Structure formats: C-alpha cells, structure tokens
Amino acid sequence: MDTVFLGGPQPQRGVGVVAPFDFALDRELWRWVPDGISLHLTRTPYVPVEVSLDLARLVSEHQTLREAVRALIAVEPQVVAYACTSGSFVDGTAGERAMCEAMSRAGVTEDGELPSVTTSGALLEALGELGARRIAVVTPYTESVTQALEDYLAEAGIVVTGREFLGLTRHIWKVPYRDVVDMARRAVVGAADCLFISCTNLPTYDVIPQLEAELRMPVLSANQVTMWSALRRLELNAVGPYQLLLMAAQRPGPVAEIVPQVLAEPSVLAEPSGFTEPPVLADPQTLAADPPVLPPLLPPPLPQFPEQEGLN
Image 1: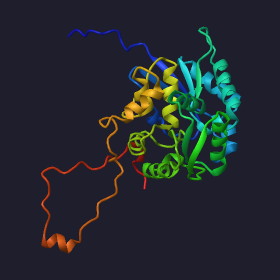
Image 2 (image 1 turned 60 degrees about the vertical axis):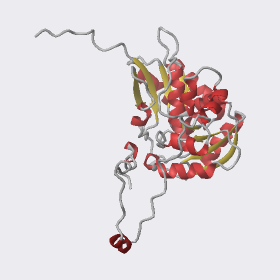
Image 3 (image 1 turned 45 degrees about the vertical axis):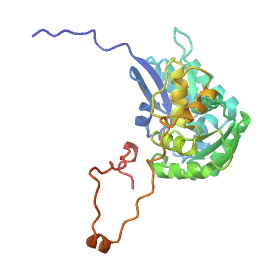
Image 4 (image 1 turned 90 degrees about the vertical axis):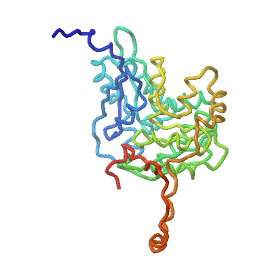
C-alpha cells in the first residue's frame, strides 16, 4: 500500500524560556501557548540558596542569562523570555531593562538581536495595556522580597493598595490553589484596578477565571503575563479560557475600554463555582429515618487540577 506523505511537520516557531533552576511549572506555561508554537526551556545553574533577594540576584546575573540564551540559540527561538518575577524586579526598572538588553545581545544572529522579555517587564506592559495604576498583590515570598516587588512597582508609578504574602523560602510550586484564592481575597481591600499574583513558580492558571468572576477585576499572574508578552512579539495571542487580559487582546479597540465591557457580560464571567464551601452533612440518624430523594443527575465533582496531584 502506498503511503502519501504530506510534507512532514509544519515550520516550527519557538519561544525560548530561561527559568531559575527550581522552576517546576513547565506544564503550566504550555497551557497559554497556541498550536504551532513550541517552548524551549533552559534553567540557570543550581545554587544552594533559598528563595530570597540573594537568590533573585544570583539567578539573574547577566553572565548567567547570556549563557542560558546561547544554549537556546541552537533551536532558533524567535523570542526569549526570562521567567522569573523576583529575578527581574530585584534591581528595579533599570535592572530589568539591562537584563533584556543582555539577553538580546547574547541572542544576536544574522537576522539581528533576539527580542527579549522578562516577567516583571511583562507585568508593567500588561498593566499599561489595562490602564491599571492601583493594584493588589499576592506573593509566596518573604516580606523583604514582597517589599522589593512593591518598590519596583512604585518606581513605575504603580500604587499597591493591598498585599498578602506566604513567607516561603522553598517549595513554592506545592502551594495549593485554595491558599492562592484565600490570599487574593484578603489582598483586595482597597480600590484596586486589578490583582497581580507574583512568582512564576506559583500555580495560578485555573484560579484566574474564578478570581476574576468573584472580584470583578482583571487578575494577572506571573506566568500569564510572561507568555502573553512573549507571544505578542510574534504577533500572536496567548490562549486561556475566561482570562480578561487575553480576552481583551482578541477584541478590537483599546484594552482599557474593553475590559469593563467584558466584565459586564454575565455569560462571560459566571458566578464563582470552583471553590465553594463544602455542604453541611446531615446527622446519620436523621438520614436513616428519612432518607433524602436524590436528583436524577448529580452535579460533577470538583476537578482535580493537574498541578495539585499528589499534594496533601
């Protein structure tokens, strides 16, 4: 039997990603990536330091970034992203710009310099698109690292209206969604334009729609803005259900005007349902005497989010 070949795979377009050595959420990054785009990840060398300002500086040294980008050049990415929030805000806005320049120069090819973005730079870009100047902040960091984020935002003219942090120095990727939601609810105490959930090692993908529906505001996360910004360099939209930043980017007109329109559409942002409190169970003796009549169809159980498998 003859086999007809259709020319093999389509030409690949790639996004290079430089991540800290302890980054554990590769699968989450992929969830924002449209078909036809590949992610090529590399990690910075291991250093025996817990999550802190010292670690943020170590994993963002220019020589470290240059070597990481050079390792990616062989697979010819069209843009490179530094996926680390603290590493890209630790030295302020000037430090963030210098990191992008160092990565772009390290990625020079015959086609020119490689476009480069960082998580913290992408955050400011997203806030600018949304017209957001007052934000609530959630982080898994210690107080000193959280304060450094607030200082970075202040330098860019962004006011932090409320903040919550966990004080963690390791295993950030193991934080369950419930903890992220609880922190977000506590952080939104003032007149914020949006909420930002920091740290690329903190799982956020599935909580974004839930929080946007409940808080009635855009919710940004570190991984979300990183992929959104990198894909914009390729003139592509990041993908993801019910995320205001992504939905607004797919509609004509200024984003700052579109977001209120999207929020006003009840079919787009349904009432929160993913994190409702468990029902109160009836007394077993009462049930035995008067068993309830069950509906013909039971509602599906809450999904087991992939990032939370195996966690207690």
